[in-house]
Amino acid sequence: MAPLVATCSRIGTLLSSRWMEGIALLLTRVALGGVFWRSGQTKVVEGSWLEISDSARFLFETEYSGVPLPPDIAATLATWGEHLFPVLLAIGLVTRLSALALLGMTLTIQIFVYPEAWWPTHSLWAAMCLVLLARGGGVFSMDALILRLSGR
Image (tube, rainbow, N blue to C red; front, side, top):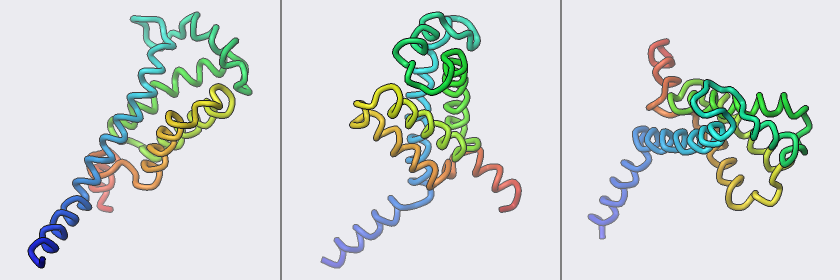
């Protein structure tokens, strides 16, 4: 029995290491960022650099009209946010700020656009945001590199 306990203990130590946490946080950053990046891509004219499409403007005037901002401003903020914050998450730069911004977008979508989508969609996005808020970007992030280089 003692060898089994020792093996389980070693496995537990390995699975709770900084490196395993870093891999989990990297995957969380990429998964969450991917959701918002793909959404942002549906809002721009194909082949353009963040030119908001007419169909996206129409969505913000109709289906997303519950958002308490003028449709033009909401479309612009959503499009830029869905491109900027996923890139920052992917490289792990200002991870907590990016996760907070995407949590705000998630809650806005939940409250004002698709209130029926909490389970399973928005709850998963919120959970990923909260993990990143609590743990940061992990060892495989620009945030960690900056901290190491600054001597902290």
